[in-house]
Structures are given as structure tokens and as C-alpha cells.
Length: 172
Image (tube, one colour):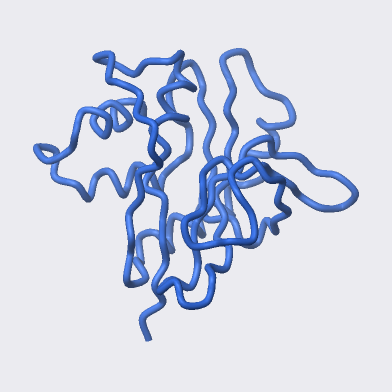
């Protein structure tokens, strides 16, 4: 059975601004949320999600005790898409990650397209069991964010636009 899901390829505005407002080669900051629509499950994204959950303790340690040059900590989780949207889930990146009263919370860092129950900027709770990716910026480089890297690599290099090339160059 096909389990469609909408996945945010990456948040170019967030990533470019997180690295000092410009990316290598001074790529322009765009104002839309680029997305990728997947009409099937992707085994590699499933593996990346499993790896993200396994390495989550290291991410949380770094979140709680950031080093100089660390910032823009993000977690990606799926949320149930609206009935009739054609998607079962939509992946949302969360910022301002914190633990309070026995639960995890984050702020929706992108605008959901197929979820009417919340908007960008709303505080959401999430389960660590649902996390599909995590990332942060360290000295201008993306640490984690393996789903972003993988999805960018699915675009042939000669077909990537300047923003996609710039974001890809942020990975060590």
C-alpha cells in the first residue's frame, strides 16, 4: 500500500540565514519553503529516520550544552495531514526545542501545506519516537540533516539550482 507523505526538502531561508545570511557563492535567499512530494515510502529515508532516533542522545547533549559556533538546532517530525489532502503525513521542522513538564516541544519552523491545525510559529509537542531527522549548524556547516543531504543528492548535480548547490555545500 502506498503511504504518501509530503517531505520538506530543505528550508533554504533558514539554512542560508543560519549561516550568516548568505551561503557560499552568495546565493540569494529565497522566501518560499521548497518542498518535495513523495508518493511512496523511501527505504533510505526510513533508514535515515532510524539513524536519527539512534543518535538522538548525542543531539540532545549538544542541544543542552552547545559549543561555541553551534546554533539553529532543529528536529523533523511527521504530523498527520488533513483528510482529503492526498498525503498521510507532512514532515515539519521544529526549532526552539525544549523539554518541559515531561514533554518535548518545538516551534513549527515551516508553513504546513496540508495541515490546518497549526501554522508556522506555533508551539507543538512531539515524541522522540517520531523524530525523522535532526540537525544544527556548527561553524557554518550542517551537522546531521541527513534527509536534506539525501534528497538534494537525488537531484542530478547539473540540475540543482544555485540555492540547492549552496545548501549542499554546507555539509561537511
